[in-house]
Each structure stands twice: as C-alpha cells, then as structure tokens.
Amino acid sequence: MNAIEKSPLSAGDAILIRGVNVPVELGSLPQKDLRFFVENPRVYSVLRMDGGEPSQADIERKLLEMDHVKALIQDIKRDGGLTDPVVVRSGTLEVLEGNSRLAAYRALAKSDPVKWGHMKVRLLPRDIDETLIFALLGQYHIKGKKDWAPFEQAGFLYRRHKTHDVDTGKLAQEIGLSRRKVEHLIAVYQFMLDHDEADTAKWSYYDEYLKSSKIKKARLANASFDDLVVEKIKSEEIARAVDVRDRLPVICSAPKALQKFASRASGFEDAFDHAVEAGADNTPLKKIAKFRQWLVLPETETALNHAQDETRRKILFELGKLSGRIDALTQKLNPRK
Image (tube, rainbow, N blue to C red; front, side, top):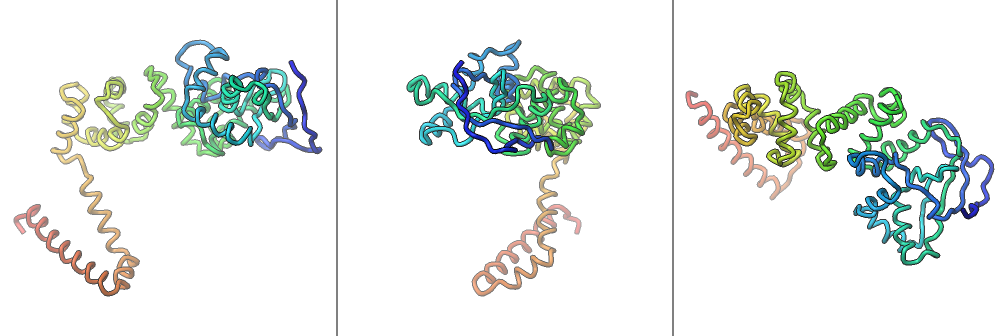
C-alpha cells in the first residue's frame, strides 16, 4: 500500500466525541485502499435482508445505485474534489464517515484513475474505542446534518441498543434526542424486523402505526391486528402512510367497524366508511373548533378592526355570508329549535 501523504497538523488537532478529544491526522490516501464500513446505516439498511455480511463489491454496487450518490458524483466532479475529508480508522482503513463519497470517487476513477486516485482523509487512531465511533456517527447524522433517512437512523440506534448494549437513556444523551423518541424509533425498527418488512420506504406507515393511542387500544384487544395491518400495507390496500395516520384511528374508534375490519368481514375502505357513518370521524368538529378558537382570539379582533376600506368591506361581506350559513346549518342539524 502506498504511504499516506500527510498534511502537517498543529498540536491539539482533534475531533471532540462525547467530551473526548480524539487525535486525528489529515492527509490523503489511495481510494482503492479504503474500505466501506459495513456498519454504516445507509449500507446496512439496504443490504440487511440479504443475509450475512455484505462484501465490499456489494456495498459499492448498492451505493452507486442510489440517487444521492449519482448526484454526488457530479458535485465532486464539478468541484474538482472533496470539500470535507472522509473519516477513516487507521489500521483497517474503514471509512467511518463518507461511504457515499468513497463510492463516488470509485465511479470517477473508472474514467480518470490518476485524478481521482487519492482522497482527502481524516485519520482516527487505530485503537479508538468502538463506542466513540458510533457516537461520532450519531453526532454527524442524527444530531447533526441528519442526512440519513429515518429508517437508517432507527437502524443505527437499534444496533447500538441491541448489539452494543447501550441503554436508551445513554443513547438519548449521546444523540441529543429524548429517551421517548429513541425508544419509539427502536420499537418501529423492531416491528418491521418482526414482520419481515424489507421495504424501507414503508417506514412512515409503521411510524404512524405505533404512534397512535387509538390504534394501540385496538392492537391490545385484537391479537392478530398487527399481522392484519401489515398485510394490508404490503398489499397496498392501505395505500398511504397518511391513511394509517388519519383513517385507521377512525376505524379503531368505532367498535362495530373495528370488529368487522379485525375479523376481515370488511376491507379497509368499507370499514372506514362504516366508522364515519357511525360518527367516529370528528374531523368536521375539529375544523369548526379550530376556526372558533381563532375567531375569539383578542389579536384576531384587533387585526380585523385594523382593516381599512376595501379589505374591511370584504371582511364584512364574508362575515355576513358566514352568519347566514351558520344559521342555516344550525337549523338543519337541530331542526327543533
């Protein structure tokens, strides 16, 4: 392997990780000698269902298929190189931070191996503690620039908790999230693993599913409810994450509609229609209440009073229309009055 071409460092140059100053060296290394980090969440989330540890070729191939890496190739080519060095562990030469950039360099080197033969690196010590490595990744991608997708963030936290036995309270401090948020992310990831859900794009469905208190009650009352909902999501009968957020809780709020849905006597759409007919959907009530709460605010009255000329006339016109419509609706909803 070629010797590293180091840039001179001033005394005290270091990366601060969880209060620990970790010494680093700056320089450049042949990109062909660098290795992808198999624990990188972006890599892991793509290849986790393939079984076993992915090969370096598998990782490179998968990364190069990703849209953000394709865009990164063009950015690096336009800029003539890296603006930020990749972070590498001495000894193993694993790229702990910057796997997408390594893949981009590999692609560029195929057409110009000389120009794209070396990468700027920030070398961490060979013996750096494993916990500091994962804390660093958390600082970069969860607390910091947050360019990992939610599924990737959750996978990172899941492995820190399960594989490295890090308490969720410590994880919360390490990452800068609340303990409740960390535990929710881990729970959603575990749910997807338990139900063999390999489609990472479905993360938001299960995120919404495990958030809802109304859905939670239905899950506790129906042992097979999770399997049913996963089946509906996979078959795309539940077509959008927003349907899990907005429609499924409505079904869960209507006992008869829920019973029909849970027993498979009704499909998702029919169960929702039955629930709405039974009065479980309180969306109109929420909208009216929200409008009323806004209308009675002192600042609303102040703003309306400050309206001048044409704007004031339009406001009076709209209020008149509202008054008439409210009277008509009140009569229809309560005809005895």
